[in-house]
Image (cartoon, rainbow, N blue to C red; front, side):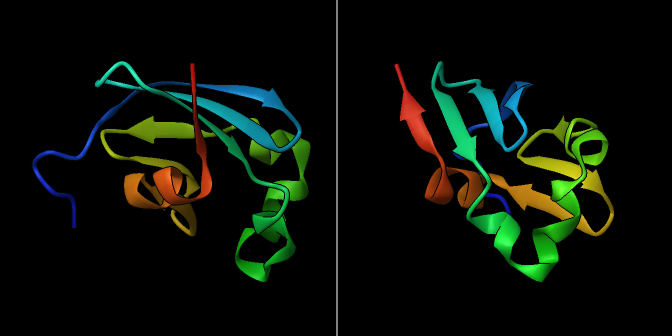
Length: 83
């Protein structure tokens, strides 16, 4: 469930085989390095470069398909704000 004050995603860019650069509507940019998460079975499919590069976004989540997604609170927890 998203809170009304949660930031929304405005763009996403793949930086390398396991890192995403996510721009938010509050002017923040989050670097999300996923290699640690990809050790877990739920994210293992992201090791496939073509699948990882197919990332999309909608409002407060990023997703690859209906089984692989991440919501804004997870992005902010696991990512780091960059200048």
